[in-house]
Every structure is written in structure tokens, then in C-alpha cells.
Length: 287
Image 1 (tube, rainbow, N blue to C red):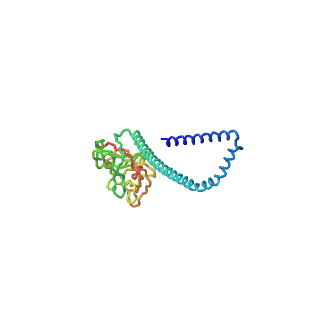
Image 2: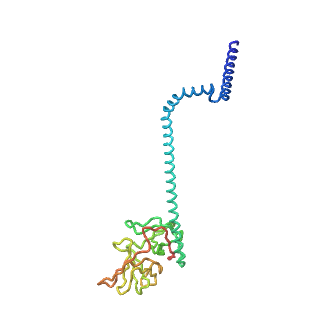
Image 3: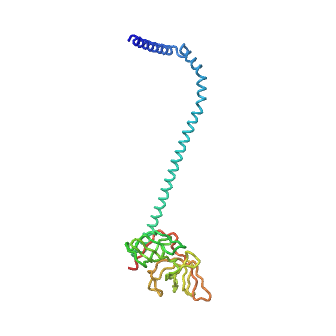
């Protein structure tokens, strides 16, 4: 017990001496400033430890610089990854906006065609299987008998020229329909050239010229000019037709009388781009 008590007394005495010494040094430093004994001791300590501090700084500087470089590299990589993510999101958003803008333009074009042709009962739809010249002469649309589509209904599409004939419905299910295009070599459409008396003939797919049409059976004596508009004749003409009267088909791109033949050679460029069909209008003409 006596030994423990002596240890406690000694510890308290040491602490008291340290506190007293600290207070004395602080008082002397305050009174004498940097010129007194305490200031001299501080300068001596600084001078003594300066070389060691310089060496320590030189030794640790590469490690500090390396740490800063490593953390900077990690941050740069993180920022690069974030930038790539943002670019990807921006690309997706831009593509989506472009798609929506195209869909809006198609919807507006379909509505405009309907306003310009109010006499037809019609239903709009989208092309879900596109035309491929090497595979078939048809497209599939995403509407069918459930929406009022029937076999042999005429199909048109809006274009920069207002709109044009695409073809007719050849097969129909409840939710889809197959459209036989004007480019099908097995079909023909009775047509006439607007403004030209007696310029009646049959539109067929042009042989050897993909995407173009020929107009047959037009006599050489009839005057047909380049850029004349070609339309369907309807069922009232001398040639029977599955299509209603007055549907635009295309423009005359070339009209040449043929020597030794009673009929001229006429090439017609369709208004519709068959390789880029999106929205179409089915005219309910066979119900």
C-alpha cells in the first residue's frame, strides 16, 4: 500500500512540474517575444531539426506525388466512364427522338392525305414487313379484318407529291394484311394520263428497271408529255379496274413513239418509294 501511494505522489509531482514548466515557458515567450531565451531555444530546435525535415520531405515527396497521381488517374478513369455512359444515354435519347419525329411526320402525312381525300372510307396502319425486291413484291401491314380491311382494298401512302397508289390487299387475317405492290410483275393497273385525251393504258412493273413502271397500250397518236400525272381510271373506263378512279400513281418520265408498233413506250416513276414504306392507308372499297 505504501509503495503504491508513493508512486501516485511521484506521478502527481512530475505532472505538476511539467505544468509549471509549460506555464513558465509560455509566460517568458509572451514577455520576451522572439528575442528571449525561449525564442533562442525555438530557433535552435528549428535549426537542429531543419535538415531532418528537409530529408523527410525529399523522401516522402515521391510517395505523396505518386499518391496524388494514382488518385488523379482513378478519378480521371471514373470521369471517363461517366462521360461514356452519358454519351450512350445521349445517343439513345437522340435516336428515340428521331424515331418519334419520323412517326409524327408519318402520322401528320396520313392525316393530311385523309383531309385531302374525304370521300374515301379509310383506315391507317404501319408496315411491319418491308418490301425486298429479291424476295417478294409484297409488304405486310399491322391491320386486318378486325379493323375493317378486306381483300382487294386499295392501299395508298403519303409522299412528297401528296400520295400515291401502293397496291391492293391480297391476303388478310384478323390483325394483319398482305399488300400486293404495283411492282409485282404478275399484276397490272388500268390508268390514264391526266389532261391527255385518249391516253388510257395499263400500268405494269418495268422489266430491267427496278422501282419503275411502264404504261402499255397507249396509241402512238396520243400526245403524252414528260411529267404528266398518271392516275387510276376506275371501273368506268374501257379497261376494267379493281381500283377506284383518280388515285395518283406517278409521273411520266419518258414517252417515246415506237416505229412499227401502234403503241408508244411510256415509262412512269411512281410517287411512292416502295423501299421506304412506313405508314399506309387502306381504302375500304370492296365491302
